[in-house]
Amino acid sequence: MKKFLILLLMLNSLFLGLNAESSTQNTVKQGKKTQNKIGIFPTTIVKKMQVKDSKRYYGKLQENEGSVYSLSLRVDGFIQKLFVQNTYTKVQKDSKLFTLFSTELLDAQSELLAASGSHFKGLAREKLELLGVDKKEIAKIQSGHRILNEITYYAPISGYIFTKNVNIGSGVKKGEEVFKIVNLDSLWVIADINEEDLSFLQNAQNKAYVEVEGVKGRSEIALELIYPNVVDNFLKARFILQNKFLDGDKVQFFPNSFAYIFIESAPRIALTLPKTALLFKNNKYFVFIKDDEEFLPQIVEVKRILGSDLYEVIEGLDEGDEVVKNALFVLDSDAQNNGDFE
Image 1: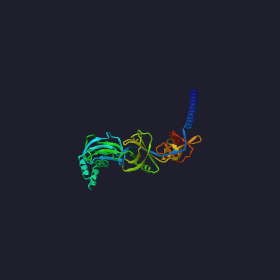
Image 2: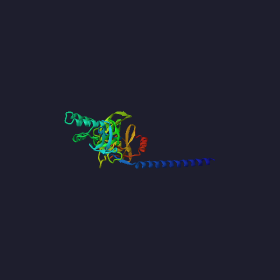
Image 3: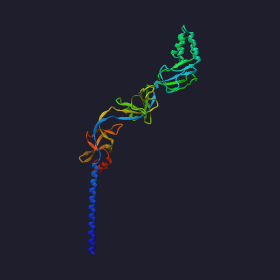
Image 4: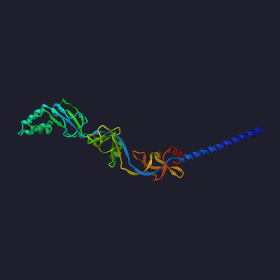
């Protein structure tokens, strides 16, 4: 019995020894795996490059209210001829729009012819002008010494017919709008801007551009007005866009088009890092900089470059330093275990 117990103790000791050796071998293997992983982390080099801050906003093109003309009649009458049949037709200043029959204009013409050669002639002529009769029509009346049954109306400005409220034979009342003509030499670009971006928007050194859906390229625009009302932390800014003319009667930009507005700073040379290389921890930014065969956490002062995935390095790194590009969560955990952040 005693011999049996001694044999049992010897076998147990042998088994424990084998387990200890196996555990030691596994620890060594695991350590080698970790070391190999550190060796394959992708890195990036801190480098200088040309950068600029950029912010993008949504907006819409609108007609410039200073370039809109509402043609309304000052007498009652009927449309006899119509020289413009469709909306969005381009018209030139002084081109014919329509002719009007009006009994009131017939009476005013009679007064002009009756006053010919008297001191009332000027008053009769002025009356026709105040009733909306063009000077070219008054000259026809005087040179022909006859009443015109139809008075021709002309385009007061060059532009596009945005509203057409009459057809041939339409009866119209004085004060009614017949045509709305919009000159598209310039347009308004209305953008919704975050209130906190106001200083960036008003920086005189920054430039603004617009990209319009369906139109290739971008065009420079000029800030004209910031509306005073703020809604849900957004305010509206108004820019001026100079239109571009294509072949024929077409313009490149038209009102009611959706647009992207870009505000950009002047280009500058900066020391840069990709966003993925930074770790934000304890209200500080860290990178893992290569030191021989290790990656050690390094505090840096950085500033985001607006509109990009880059950060500008203010302090803590030099040009040419090599840092981990990503996978920072693995190194972060390892650094915490080693107390490197303390």
